[in-house]
Length: 318
Ligand SMILES: Cc1cc2nc3c(=O)[nH]c(=O)nc-3n(C[C@H](O)[C@H](O)[C@H](O)COP(=O)(O)OP(=O)(O)OC[C@H]3O[C@@H](n4cnc5c(N)ncnc54)[C@H](O)[C@@H]3O)c2cc1C
Image 1 (cartoon, rainbow, N blue to C red):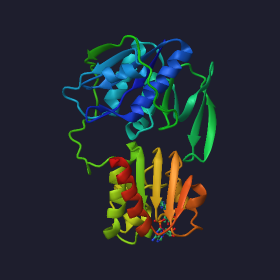
Image 2: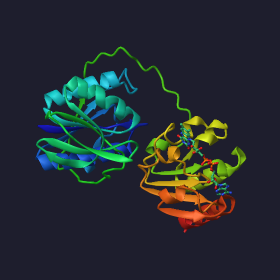
Image 3: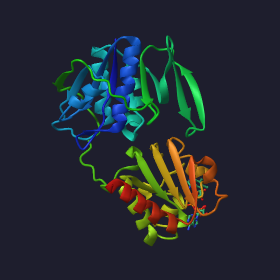
Image 4: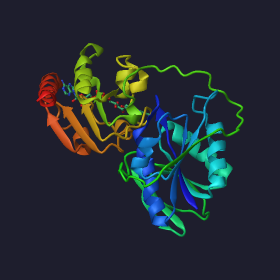
């Protein structure tokens, strides 16, 4: 018996969502009295994983295969899970995790639970709580199978350090064929990606035009945040479509979401429900966003944002 977690990397760094997956895997391993195994692909330094309770790392050599490939990666996960008799394989709810999870479950003949929130409510049988309909509802699901693959909803568990006593690392070459080869990936931007960001500053039509986006960018830069926008803003070509958040755009599960001049239409809120703290800045006290927000500032963005940015800058420099 073991618990297996898939560790994602970005530019040789372990993604925060994977540290959350490791913390979550550790908690399940403790509950079941078993060991936690991490599988990563071409990670240069695996030592950080020992801080999060990982007992053993399979670092897969990626000499000719440096890009994510769900077919190949799922083959590898299944081979290791079979060898280590894993009863849980855990991935994050990132784009790659959501791609990898169901394929891995089908190959491993396991139950697949997506968007799981919190630790299982029971282990025999395994019962989990999952978010659905963009966090507007929750469902409780039971597995009739004792092999589970699950994707953990981002920011739903947290990242906890728990140093492990000894970590064994092995660099493995696992033979695995794929009908698909990813030749190259061209990033559209070097900025913090919305999906992985801790903080997101988002602008709506209240910003009046693209020439005013420096306000959003300056605030985001002080906070180390990603920038996002509402659908009309990207439809108007003020911002790239990659920044569009909502039902028809990207989901955001940040710790802090600051919405400036965004009315809070239901389709926008659908994409940000998983964010922990929502702050709205709007000059209309009746804007629907105030009902969904944790904190609100009723005011003109053109006055509030420069003031907020300079205060935060001063705080950082103090
Ligand atoms: C099928 C469908 C799917 C959709 N999907 C999405 C989606 O994924 N994401 C999405 O965002 N939308 C989506 N929409 C559109 C959505 O319904 C709203 O029209 C849209 O979110 C509104 O964008 P907004 O808040 O930027 O603009 P507006 O509704 O025009 O709101 C602008 C806000 O800015 C405030 N404001 C104005 N001036 C200032 C100022 N000086 N300072 C501070 N505040 C100011 C106003 O009070 C207002 O609340 C979808 C719609 C449909 C029908």
